Length: 478
Picture: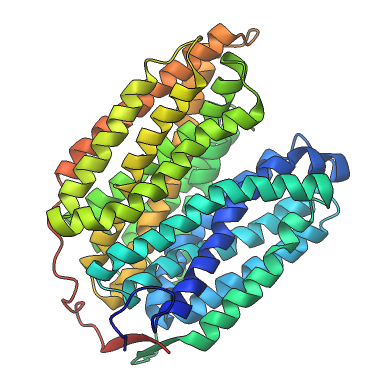
């Protein structure tokens, strides 16, 4: 049971702290390694293979999220999140000890599989512990983790690389993992009727395999191989085929790993499509704003990083206040306002040129970030509030996975737009300006679609409504 209070000093405070610490592992790790690229390459080589360190981590995290979501509904949140922390711990130790680039890539897969369990499960735990009204306040705590990570991650990576050793980028996770696991083990308790679950092994294999092929093909198409090459066509075709077989298999599964009703309920479909848009815009800006600021506007890496940081800082600022808005006006109004801000900021990006101020770049990114904070978290909370305990893990994981899918699609589509503008000749500031302008146009198109989707959001059902056929469930912290 709970004491009705929100914060670190409340009865649920230690669990909230553990959730924030677990989330920080994933948040910091997504940014900390970026500044260590030169140090790692000098030590173990492999400059050409280095992009795979990011790709395989994203791939492993994305494809495992739906499976972990279902497992948390079958076995409870606690064992799944502890498993994820354990995998992340082992992967971090192995990454820190890697003596060549290929081993580092393999061990990043282990880390990614751990992150795939941590992120959706901790968000689901918050949905279990707090009501919609309470989550309006808790969101501020969780949003602060990502805001701090956006600043601390690159800074720590630079400090470790320059003054200690790049391996400590991974070793620093060890005490954090142990502390998070200890706090969750001792302070988070679940009580629910345990029954013998029916595990959908066939669905899990088909889903994971299909998503792996599809996202791998999208991430590496035009990079590792040409889009029209036999390898690209075969990988994408195999991915689509496995997902088609998965669709038919799930219709007959007793306990499907990803129930098809997720794609049939209007609120879940709309919130999922919004998540795809959020992922696409986020990665599109993250990939090209620093390049534009440095190679076109002539700023240094640090200033370019600060311009992009305005996006990642604006997000948690508005997310911490989103609860007040959706509690007063509803989720749909909050999402429409948020997506409208994203559209305004994206449209302003179209005014940027070869002689623009980097300050304006940061300001427009801040507007987009503020809109993202009023869109991403509230729509996820709306989706969570429409289902009961036994479905919340699947719903949360599906939303997070779709955001990752949006990021992957954004990399492919925006990359194709940039390459079409640059061509095969010498890359000049004029070419880059044209390429980035086309990307900004693409982002505006996505933002327009997001505004339309937000206006189509239905009102979610009462969170207190029990799930269909749900057992008596209770989550407590003591």
